[in-house]
Length: 97
Image (cartoon, rainbow, N blue to C red; front, side, top):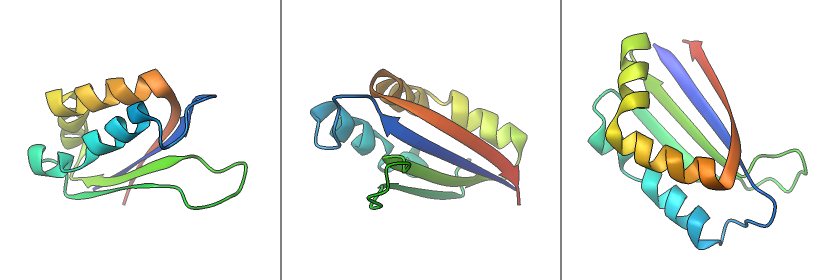
């Protein structure tokens, strides 16, 4: 099993109430229903007031490297990934569990 974590930091001048940020977050809703490789799927806005905190998080679980690749290249994922890339920087961690 592989745990796939992504943290998003909104670009300067973009708040979580920005229509682009709201659309990007909404794009992740139900993605687990569209991509069968996703065994677990959690998303949400950060609630920590700390300056070092990222703004949005994604926590998912897939069976193996092939499933992770299938998720990463799935058309539904590519659409929302592009939305996020236009408004945020991100960090990714994938680790075996």
